[in-house]
Image 1: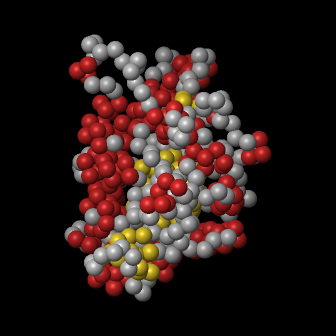
Image 2 (image 1 turned 135 degrees about the vertical axis):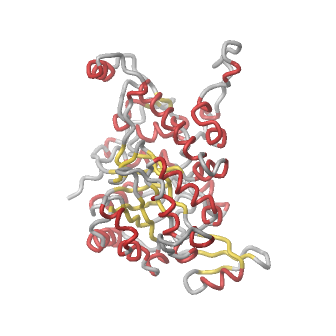
Image 3 (image 1 turned 90 degrees about the vertical axis):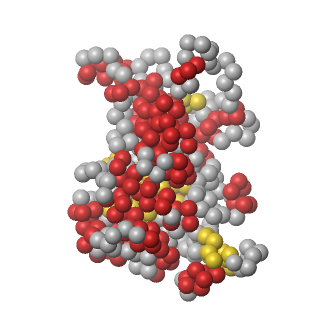
Length: 423
């Protein structure tokens, strides 16, 4: 990730200095074939010999098509993006609340990528005002991040999804944003979304967690549970409520969002639960524009160690259970390079979220690290999609991937009906 943030598209290839003097391929090894390999990583992309879509493109262009001709433009939860990717939610954790969150917002805006602002930013860092000069906590506020994004955003691209947790609801975050004149450009251009947070990949079934000093914890003690469990004199654990959902509660929450904020897009974020297919179906049937699924690999914030490797479904299994939906499915979990993203798209995702990778990229270079990382991702996707004989990101399908021992990972026939058709 850091190499791509430094060198961009050049990092996709072997060292140029070795060209003409080194034979490549024979010694390349991979952990992807291990018995416990991640399902997405273990898949192979499999180009066909016969490519009728390439012939169609040749006729359309009146020349042989190249990878430059692949169209990556994607609608991400009703927001237009130059490629099937978006900036994942960063909440109030210290790493994102500092300059990295603002730098990531600024570069995402420059790229025209849709951006999600995570939970608990308002209760912890404040709401802010877009019209004020950026400084200190104001820049770290919710509207400070939006300002950094809008300052770079080109017309007609991108958009902002504002996530809301239980504590954010108490602070009326969505009401604040929806009624703020500074957010009117987003509303009027259809580029504002609200994301209901049901769960997260890093700690499925739990709410957000951060570490605070005792003075900061005292300021938010009425809003959050504060636990003295870290074994030190200065630091305590701040815990958010995970929220309580049943099928009917989720359905009514989405209907309430559509009724109270009719001009905002509706997103729902799910953790990788065993009933993720059923939960996604409820969200789409209630009218959600997009469902975000965090794989168990996802997450940038603080989490108990026991959750990191043993709780929640891997993203590949979530995709296999959901099948190819008929509505927007956004996914995150160790997304940073084209092959993993292409496999997720082939299994039904509309777009992939850049979380940990984005923060590492902007830490490596606060001015252009994320830009270079995304440029590398875009080139790799174009190369891969073209090699598969296709010329739109949305054309990727099950036929394009293969799993050792089982062949093509077709979904269970009982899951064959596409999810997402709204009433």
